[in-house]
Image (cartoon, rainbow, N blue to C red):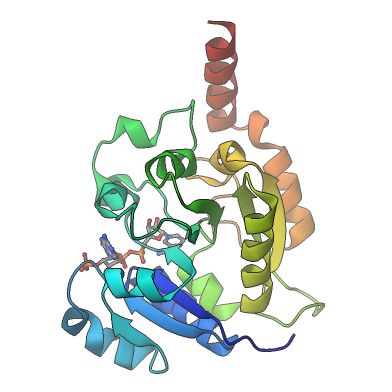
Length: 232
Ligand SMILES: NC(=O)c1ccc[n+]([C@@H]2O[C@H](COP(=O)([O-])OP(=O)(O)OC[C@H]3O[C@@H](n4cnc5c(N)ncnc54)[C@H](OP(=O)(O)O)[C@@H]3O)[C@@H](O)[C@H]2O)c1
């Protein structure tokens, strides 16, 4: 695949953000990485782990990139700036994690996927869920060229086809097979508690895990809650 000359912003300079930064640099993107604060705070991390990327602030990353990956704790999504992200393709890679986010019933509500919450907050952005279910070490270890045996897959959920395709292109360029999971509501099939969460598998197996969601404990809980809400 031809290399790109597009600028990609990554919000979050932690485990996931830096590995996605490495994949993006390898795919030819100009990469801007931001943490929660000043660029000085993350300079050493970025210089060491993703030397070809530019450490910056979230405000500058949002200003300069049309596509932004959210690689920060989900519990902090309300600290994002909806106006800075307006009109952007926003790839939501976040998950609720009790140890980090604390008790947050809003983030585990079976009626709505966490990406629907994020999209409702970032009203003017085009939110697509991707890269959330696969561990950063697997993302680091497993990129492969298109068509190579053993290539692993990344699930994508989104409501707008154009932006789902953009996310799929990113996944492809990063070295993984994109698998469409459905609209943002179906993003719940990729969240913690699903069989997809943690999956580092090829596309066929990933499709099967997505389809089997209703057979899991979390799947049954989500199905019943949504059915009940439909009836009321
Ligand atoms: N780790 C994985 O394998 C993995 C895989 C898939 C998805 N995820 C998801 O990715 C997210 C990050 O996980 P992680 O393991 O990379 O966490 P992490 O190592 O703790 O890194 C989190 C990063 O987010 C930054 N941050 C916090 N608020 C921010 C804001 N408003 N704007 C920009 N950056 C902000 C933090 O900066 P400060 O230090 O300055 O607060 C830190 O650099 C989580 O939602 C997680 O569920 C993780």
